[in-house]
Each structure stands twice: as C-alpha cells, then as structure tokens.
Image 1: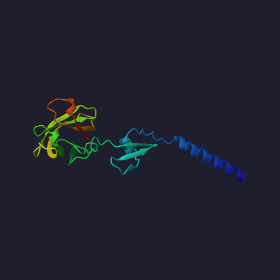
Image 2: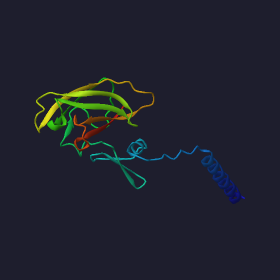
Image 3: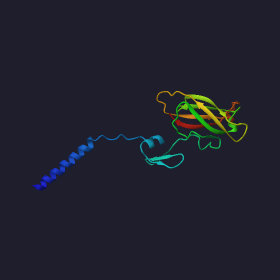
Image 4: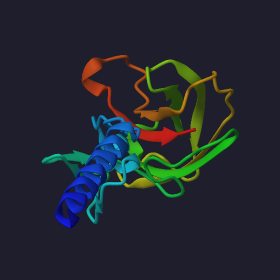
Amino acid sequence: MKRNWLLILGGVIIVVLVVILLAAPSKPKVVISDFGSCAAAGHVIMESYPPQCAADGKTYTQDIGDELNKADQVKLTNLPANTTVKSPLEIEGQAKGPWFSEASLPVKLVDDKGNPLAEAIAQAQADSMTSDFVPFKVSLTFNLPVGVTKGNLVFEKDNPSGDAANAESFRLPVKF
C-alpha cells in the first residue's frame, strides 16, 4: 500500500512539473543577424579591433567604416567609430593635403539609408598644400527624423574637377 502511494505521489509530481513547464512562457528566439544584435543578445564581445561577437557558430564584426583601410589618408582625433553623437557635432581630425581643395574638405552626415542630415565644409587648420597630414575642424548641426538611430559621417576628397578618377571618400558609422 505504501508503495502504491509513492507511485501515485511520484506520478502527481511528474504531472505537475509537466504542466508547469508547458505553462511557462517561452522566451522568443532572438534572431542574430549582425554585430549589434549579437551584442544585444548578451554574447561575448571578443577583444579585437574591430570588435567581434560570436553566436550560433558565426562571427559578426562591428562596422567601423573606413577607419582601418584609410588610416593613412584620414584620421579623426575626437570621434571613434560607432560613437553616439548629438547636434551640434564638433569634429576634429587630420587628412592628407591632397584631400583638400583651397583648404576645404566636404563633410556630410547621412542616416543609415543615405539620406542627408547635414553638410558642412571642414577647414584646414594649417597649410594644405602638402602631402602630409593637415589638421581640420568642422561643426555639423542637424535635426534627426523620428526613428533614426544610426548613420554615417562621410568625408569626401574635394574634387573640383569632377573627375571620377580623383573621387575618394572616408566613411565613419555613428549612432544617434
């Protein structure tokens, strides 16, 4: 008799556990499609540059724009990639002399779809008639459309000739 009660009690406990597990709300599956969603899901960020995040056997690399592949042409001194920015945005950096024309360097801020948010001309802070780096400063004032959370700063090599062979740009992703 005691054995029957133990079997009944064990069966009741199993049924209760099954009911609890089935009734518990399941967490929605997080879809990981890029570095941001991987990091937001709490996966480990590797100590590398650019930062990387691994999930489900895949590695996602953070977009840092042209920061590495054009470091020999344009360098920003006060604005790393993926920094959260606000208006007015003060930018300081250096660009090789050939990026300037008459000491000016076009800069624009665009949203993640390429829509323009602001444009300005960075002014050389030294003689730009050199092949060396020349410091520059620029300030961008902008209004954000509702829902815009990411964008890019785009520095364009001043190209008064309009010749496509002379065109070059430097892109840096930012957050708002």
